[in-house]
Length: 68
Image (cartoon, rainbow, N blue to C red):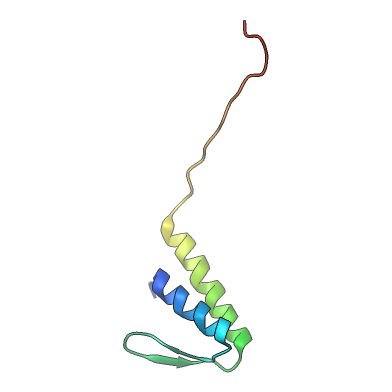
């Protein structure tokens, strides 16, 4: 399933409120515990990171001294 940042925000709001029922646009999911909801949040976060692709690398070089 493709997750969105809106899905992540919805789950995080439910965790903050202590709710176990999450409503998405066309469906409702009821989790047994808040810990299960936290696991769902972690899954969504990891899927969003995977979908973003590899992070770019930045290498910064500097020289301290008088020069050549």
